[in-house]
Length: 62
Image 1 (cartoon, rainbow, N blue to C red):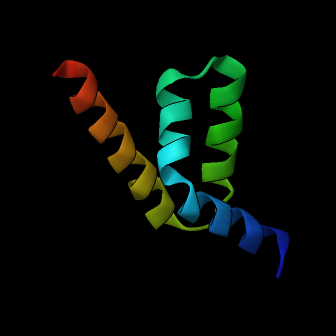
Image 2: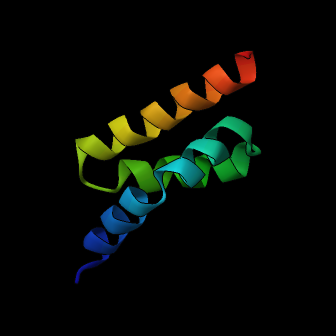
């Protein structure tokens, strides 16, 4: 398994965690989360994390 495969697998399995880090983390944590998503190599991973962010937004608004 290559490094890019590892990153893609991590992002795929942890989209909820990454969404929470992006929504609630400090600048450094958000930068790491964005780097992981950007380097996952799969546009679908961006959609997964975006879906988590939208879910978090709805939770915060209710």
